[in-house]
Image (cartoon, rainbow, N blue to C red; front, side, top):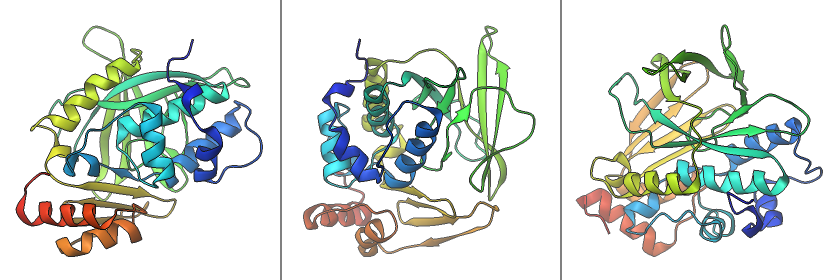
Length: 283
């Protein structure tokens, strides 16, 4: 049974977009290659919301936007598109939901982050694939408690397993950043399906409590640098924990989206983004 509508995917177009040729077997080596290429190809971005358009999670809409029109997406889009790819190639794919933590802020937020549990045909382990967070990891991470650090390229993570209030498994992923070690998200092994992600997507893309409805946010991760545009604030972060932050002009944002984040916007959308940044008005 198809859960993620992989049959609707133009697989050749997707693979061309991420620059992958050759073997397509559902092996661990292929999974590593796919996660790296997807994460470094598709930027994280919420521009559809700021431009007044709905975020659609059907395969045709996602591939039209992200594959044909060279855009990115936020977690629900990246996760759903990647799940369709994996399903089409024969991987085992199960959706998961996580809670995001914003920097040092430890307030409990809704479980509105989409992740994937993936299995391969040549390995019995389960793998965490989080291609929609915006800052990695660049590789699948084995779902097993680890003593010490994990490295995904030069970026550093830890993965810990604890218990939730009912005694179930609760996983915590931490990331080394400019502010030291920070908890980035927690998640459980409770399976999530496209209908569950549709509910989370609706909340995140429409609620006044969601940061994604108030300002444009874009992220781009590469092995050596992570960029994040948060409204008019541009952050540049490096794996060693160093980085810089600067304020940019609204008129520069469309150019920066293209040059840094590889997000292509037409003249009309660029004008709408600048107007939003100048006035705060949503389209």
